[in-house]
Length: 303
Ligand SMILES: NC(=O)c1ccc[n+]([C@@H]2O[C@H](COP(=O)([O-])OP(=O)(O)OC[C@H]3O[C@@H](n4cnc5c(N)ncnc54)[C@H](OP(=O)(O)O)[C@@H]3O)[C@@H](O)[C@H]2O)c1
Image 1 (cartoon, rainbow, N blue to C red):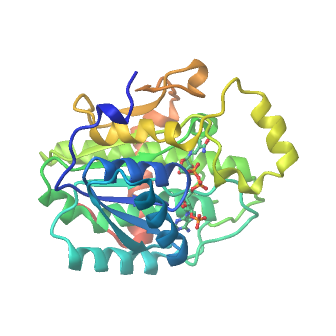
Image 2 (cartoon, rainbow, N blue to C red):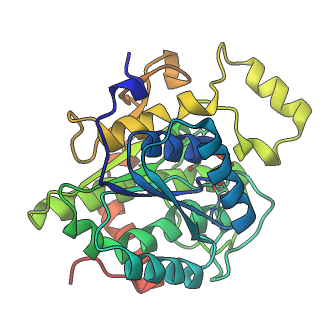
């Protein structure tokens, strides 16, 4: 079984992990730091970032370094400010982990008017990755890991007429759509990278079922009932392993999707995911989503 003990030395590598103040992102950032990387804890609350850095340092096994990055993915202005600041301080970027996420919040919109889950889980990360593209190209074999979910299999396409919450809100449907968008983005980015002869890898990961703050919008009693359906609910260190495998293992190829290897991919150790639907492989849908995201964010990768 693959664990963080299998990770290569990451000394000299520069990494950004979004949503790294807690949960899977926190454990991902901690493991990258312990392997020697310089890791930016990119999150929206400076106090939470500094507390996370303290907790990582207190664990005392670090060989890398940790930096603060203020990033609110629900604001394209914030995404641009964060990217510009990072670009002014770094020449290249080896690892971008598009991890931050929100699940079934009350109906709400981003600063730019997009349904919150679509805006944070996908569109903000689309803009961020594009803004970092020059830095990623300057690195030696950079990787972009985007967090999806088993919930992506529940999405029945993408309704482009409902990405600004035009229709009655279905919180689980919009979560599934955002996570399908993450898969479509991963694959479309990989196709475009390959067509341009790039050695950057675009890959996806999902953490099975992991107890984190992601479930904050589910009432505690309901959550206990839901978790009771699973033999194992993983802790964040284990839920982070598919992301870490995707970010560092030598066997990884562009467009790969990793998750836990247990039954239904609820728990276990990293393996290629078997989650697959027609929508996840729909190249026309992926192209439409890419063009929509470019138009709405104003971020163009390949010019
Ligand atoms: N846990 C699971 O079982 C599970 C299953 C499938 C997929 N996933 C995916 O795994 C990823 C990590 O989730 P998690 O379980 O670790 O959840 P989590 O503990 O709630 O962490 C989510 C992170 O995203 C951040 N975030 C939320 N909205 C943001 C915004 N507008 N701007 C910047 N950061 C924002 C949160 O910051 P705050 O602390 O400030 O809110 C937090 O740092 C997500 O993409 C999620 O969809 C998780």
